[in-house]
Amino acid sequence: MASKEQYDQSQSDVAHDHESQTTPKQGGWITFPFIIGNVFGMSLIFSGTMGNFIVFLIKHYNFKSIDAAQLFNIINGSSSFSPLLGAIISDSFFGCLPVITFSTVASLFSMILLTLTAGIKAFRPTNSHCGERCQLALLYTP
Image (tube, rainbow, N blue to C red; front, side):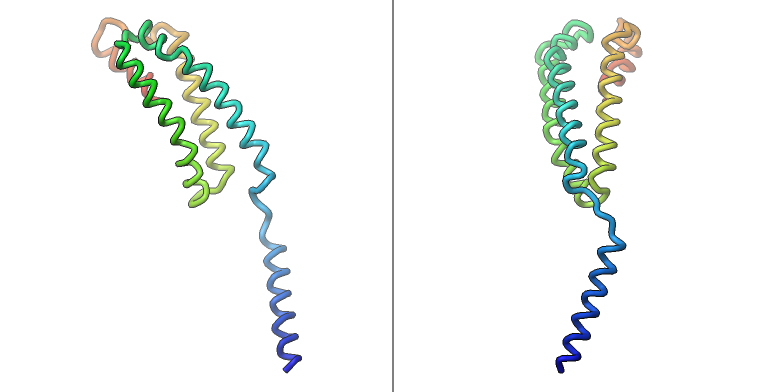
């Protein structure tokens, strides 16, 4: 009987050794510096941008102050909710690194687009109705 228990134990050890050799270590503390760097950078960019966003909308996009405040609240709420959504997607489907990479690229793209709308006058609304729709679509894209 003791030999059967020893055999089962040795088979269990072999299976455990085989699993540990074939499964690479992912996530954990290895990705932590990247996550902290990403969160710090995006928070810094977001707070700097959003501080003047309402004034920008009123002055350059001819928004009414209440509409500018509503758009600011929508963007602020979305940016607060997106980490929760990213965590759910990361844990359920794709893993940590692809979700962080996608969110970083999407945030960079949106900041570049917002910078272009501020810097290039052609991206701001004019008096034509069709042009205004296209430029508002450009503003709402990110």
